[in-house]
Amino acid sequence: MGNPRSEAVTPDGAADFVPARGGVAALRRAAEGCRGCPLFQDATQTVFGAGPEHARTVVVGEQPGDQEDREGEPFVGPAGRLLRKALADAEIDEQEVYFTNAVKHFKFAPVKAGGKRRIHKAPSLREMSACRPWLDAELRRVDPELVLALGGTAGKSLLGNSFKVTESRGVLLYLPAGTLPATAQSRAGDGARGLVATVHPSAVLRATDRKEAYRGLVTDLGVAARFLT
Ligand code: URA
Ligand code: SF4
Image 1 (cartoon, rainbow, N blue to C red):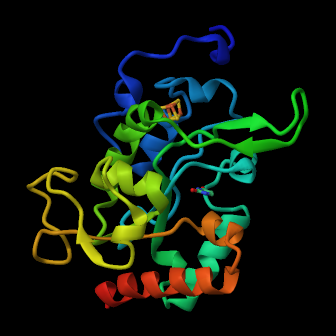
Image 2 (image 1 turned 180 degrees about the vertical axis):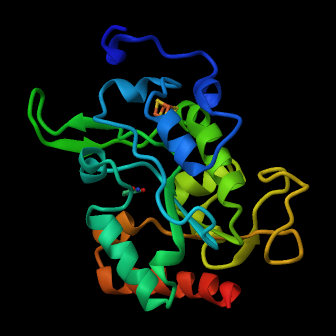
Image 3 (image 1 turned 180 degrees about the horizontal axis):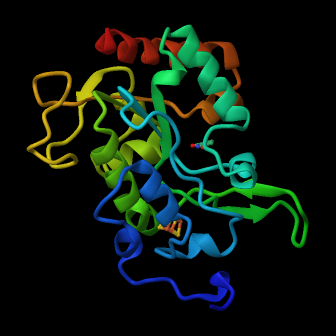
C-alpha cells in the first residue's frame, strides 16, 4: 500500500467504508481509513464520535477543530470545554452523552501562507453529504432518545438545508422519520427521538456579549434536560 494520502477519493462518499455489522468501535476503526471526500488528505486523522455506546443523548457538532484534529477526540478544545461547562450548568451529565460531528475531518487553511497556525473552514454541502453515512450509522448504533444539534451545519445535516438556527433554537423538535430504522423502538417509548438545536459553542466564544450568548446556550440545553427527565 502506498501513502494513504495519495489515494483517490471514492465517488460515493463515506458509504463505501461503513461496515454493515459491529458497534461504534467497529465504525470508529473503519472510519480511520475513510476517503469519502478530500478532507482526509490534509487532516491529521479521523475524529470519530466518542461516548457511551447507548448514550441517551447524542451531541452533533460541525467538525473537529485544530486541537481535536491533533488529539483525535471530539470537543477537547476551547469550544468543547465551553460546551461541557454549559451541559453541566444545564444539569446534563456529560458522562451520558455521545459527542460527534457532522463531518469527521478537520477542514482548515493556514492563517499565513506556509505558516503553521491553522484556521477552521466551514465544510461544504458536498463534504457534509459525503460524511453523512457515518453520522447515520452512529445514530443507528447509539439510538439515542435525544439529539442535540450545535449550530447551522449540524442542523442542516439533520433537518435539511433550509434549517436556520436563529429560527429553530431552543424548541423541542423531532428527528425526521427515516433517520433511524422504523423498527427500532425508541427507549423514550413513542418511537420519536427528540431534537433540540442551539448555537455552536464556538459562536459563544466569538460573541461580543459572551455572557449573554452563554446564558442563551444554557437555556436551550435546559429544554433538552427537561426532555430527558
Ligand atoms: N467544534 C465542533 O463542532 N466539534 C468539535 O469536535 C470541536 C469543536
Ligand atoms: Fe470520510 Fe468524512 Fe473524512 Fe470526508 S470528512 S474523508 S467523508 S470521514
